[in-house]
Length: 586
Ligand code: AMP
Image 1: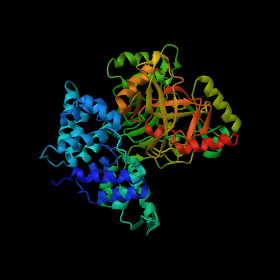
Image 2: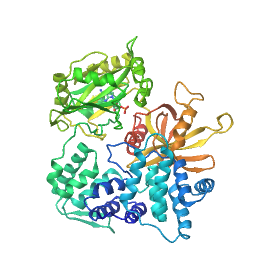
Image 3: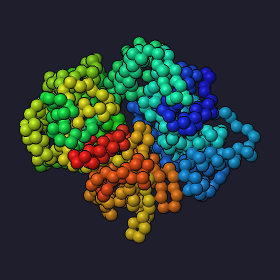
Image 4: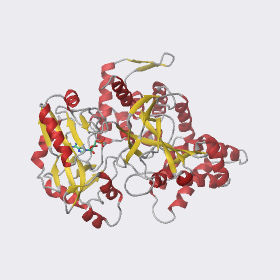
């Protein structure tokens, strides 16, 4: 079979990196997709977002900067210290590899051209390795690629491994380029004017909806591209597959009950907001139950009691449910905060013991699929009522989430107060008429919590401390989200504890961030965006110190949000809105 040269893909990456306009990017990508053979289309789609698997598959390559440095050393024969030295100077390890391969290439005469297939195969192999000798074999697989790589190819191989391609391709751009490439609508793009002429707007919008829906049910742009290339019917026929997780619907904040009614309509449904973790429950035709977190990690093995409860308390052969699992103290029957149960999510051993110590109760609040029928386009009212037909509540095992449908502000306020008294985080407010939008924060459901001034932000940098904090990272750069980029909005050290135990500590953050380092200069490091913290603040200010254009006054870390993914990081758009509200005294 004929595979695309990796060089060709890298040249497109370079174009994408150079051009910041979304329409330019869409054009480059769509041209690339059109030139790709159908056998390779899926892989090229994944690689164009810097991934090697579809979005529903959270498998990671699992190589830190340190391991990458070992691979570069192995491929170039340059010692690790010199590479680290270069890294401190240049910052980006991709660029370091590029310049070192360049020096080396001048002295060698011969190399095999790399295909995209070889690159993706080696990286996939690396991600699947387990057990003894894994580290050395990972280093070898990457070194093998680097040995054949040109300088430009080395840059992008390294960046793909570190999960930071830096070419600014967001999900929306990729979706549009798939439509431009295979949607069979005539699109004229005037680069000079940065304007788009679409011949049949209505048809284009129809295809856009179909393609978005196809992604929503599959969480896989690779298969979407492959099917659209075969015709729009293939796309329309795509549906959910039980056992394969989809992205969960997300919730923006509501200010108060009044605001919630304004945005969700009257009447609307209020529900207790449990302080647990999101659990997507699948049961397939063969009776197999699978459980996924909001980041789509499979945690079935960690929660055997939930598997049992689902089999026992939910009627039906085949379904997908959305729920929140909450830990409780088995003796006192008091709900425990998320942090206490979070250790169970990662547990691979002693599962029975921790299960007894920290059992969870499942609170089901939505249904996505039932007996061959997709429910995501049904109104929430119908979905929520349907749960009554299929769930037999059993306290401390599996129940329907507590709800109240009302148009009355006083009644809602009382429900809110009572929920807080019982120890809930607040309420969720849901529009009765709306559909289920996977992965989107569209406002079909809102969250209502008393601590309004808090954001979930991602750590993108840090600085080593001095004195008694020597050896630890002690100041952390926070960033918000803007499309697929992360923009700095401030630094924080307050709220982080000196010692481990009881809250986030410097030691813990240092351990979490070290493997994520992408650049290092003196005491300062940059890290791959991954670790999310909830930060309270007193006020949002305009600021030219940070690239977002804003800063937070008196920020303080209140907790680590291990359950959250990058989609959950507060958007700049929302921060602007909060700033405006604050200015007008609301
Ligand atoms: P937050 O984590 O603060 O962004 O709030 C949204 C999260 O609250 C959801 O992703 C769920 O994990 C959780 N949650 C708790 N109770 C509910 C509920 N009744 N309906 C929907 N989500 C809930």
